[in-house]
Length: 287
Image: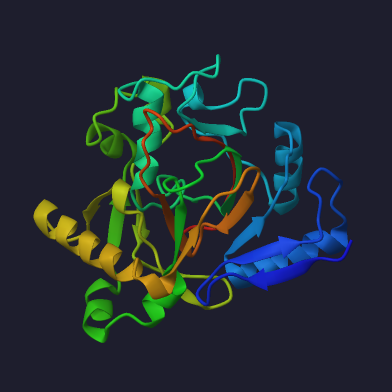
């Protein structure tokens, strides 16, 4: 197995060739992928028609796996598989006001995965099963290391030392979603994370997850929303962003510690989109 790595965007993103994810991964290939993932932040594997079992097996090479707090959206046989779909079990497109479609539309906002945990996820691996071809449903990834490094000095000075509260239950309340089951809500209490994250290698990144950010320390609600919007606008400029245009059975793997992402809107009442995701558990708090 000889891997090829082709850069997709100056800020982040690379396509990996020479690999079949249906086959067992060698230690050498795993180490090469880990290095490329660390360097590029987002890795793309084309034409990988894998099963959920193969998806989970590949993901475990990079760490333990999380399970979503809301089990209504996980695979019964493999709870590590989080299902993002606007299609029911019969293959019919769901009504646009259904709970699953409303929940999936949360991905249309910039976020980092599991920011509502004390230790957010290390990364995620997403399998495009039914993808939209011809416009809509693209996934954008923003490089938060580069965004921090190039941030205007005045804005950087305003956020140094600040923390934000990330709240799963608050997010749901403000997006017209039904209340969580009490045991599910209890599993995800609000957490605080610094706006500037220091990584084990000494590098730093902005750490924001706009859709989940309830309040920034020392700011009222209006000031919080204004600063979150300012940081989001800055970090989502074109030079920081790779936009992935999905092809059938793409696998996309991203580093959740220094990127954020969103899905571009699409006509979820008529366009089928079925994605399966695993989340790699984190090992460190946002320091």
